Image (spheres, rainbow, N blue to C red):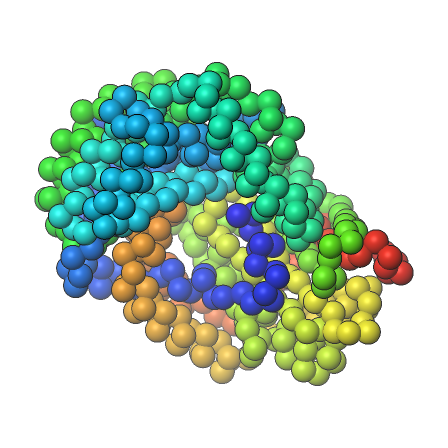
Length: 451
C-alpha cells in the first residue's frame, strides 16, 4: 500500500495513472447531499445489471493521533465483525449469498468499503453498510482476534519483505513532519499497544455520514439511489463535533537523504529515489498533469526515455522506471528506480540514473512519443468505462482528498493539453536533490560504497 515499492518484485509498472480516467461527456454523473451531510455520487451505466456500492470515509492513516499508528486500518478489520443486527462474518456472507463480492481498503487519506452485486441487491448492501456505520460492537475478544490478524498481515506484507521495509524507511525519511511518513498498517509496537478505547474513539469521531461519500456506479438511476440513500443513510444523525481536517505542513526540505538497507533475503539489489512533489489541487491540476505525463515519458514503459538510455544504450539496467500518484491531500512523491544489470554496481547504476535524468532536461520530450502516450490515454479512458469498480474508485478517491466531481471530469482534457515545455519544467522543479531520499536495497555481503 505504501506507494510504489510493493510492485518492484516483478519489475513491471503499469500506466494506472492513465487507466483510471474517463471522458466526462460519456458519463452520466449525478451528485447530491443528504440532509445529514453525506455526499452522494451516482454514475449511471446501464449496459450490464451490476452495481458497485462504495462508502468512503475521510479518515485514513494520516488522520490518526500520534502514537496510534495503524488504528484506521485496524478499525477497517473490525468493521467486518458483529453489529447490533449482524453476527461476526455475516456481512460478507450475505454479500456472497447474493452473488456479490466485497472488501475494504485503507490509505493515507481515506478508508473505503465496497460491494459489487446485481443491481437489484443494492438496497440490501445499503442497509448493511448503514448498520455498521454506527452499530459495530467493540468487544475485547474481537479486538484481540483482529490484532493478531493485523500483526500477521504486517509480518507477511512488510516484515518479511525487504522491499517493503526499505520503502517504509524511505517514507519515514521523506516526510519530516507529515503523517504520510508513518506506514498505513502502522508500526508494530504501536499496533500491539492500541487499546479498545483507541479504536472506539477513532470510530466515534469519523464514522458518521457527514464524513462519508457514497459512490454508486452501474445499472442504477439517480432517483433510485436517492430513495435508498435517504431510507438507509439519511436517518443516521451527523456528528456535530466532527473535527476540521487539517493536514500537517512539511517544513522546507533542503537536504538530500540517503539510506542503505542490507538484508540476506534480497534477490535483486536496486536503487530507489523519491522526490517531494505536488499533488492534484482542486481547480488547478496542470502541475500534477505534467508530472503524470513526465512519469510516463521518462520511465513508463519499453519506449520511455530511461528505458532507452539505461537498458538499451548503456545496458546499465535490467529495469528502470518513474512513478507518480497525484491523488493525495498533501504533497506526494515522484519516484524513480533502477535495477542494475549483472556486473553493474549500485553506485554505477545510480550515477547512470542521475546522468540520464539530467540529460532528459536537456533533450526534452520527443513529440512523437508524447503523441503516442496521449493516444493511449484516450484509449484507456474508453476501456475504463467498462468497469464499475474503476469508475467508483476514481470519483471516491478524488472526493475523499478534496477534489471535486468537476476536477475528475476535467482531468482527461487537462492531461491532453499539457505541452512538452510544461513536462520539462515539471522535471526541473521536482527533480531536486534537496527534497529527495535515495535508498539502496542490497545484501549484507555487498562491497558497494555510498557516495
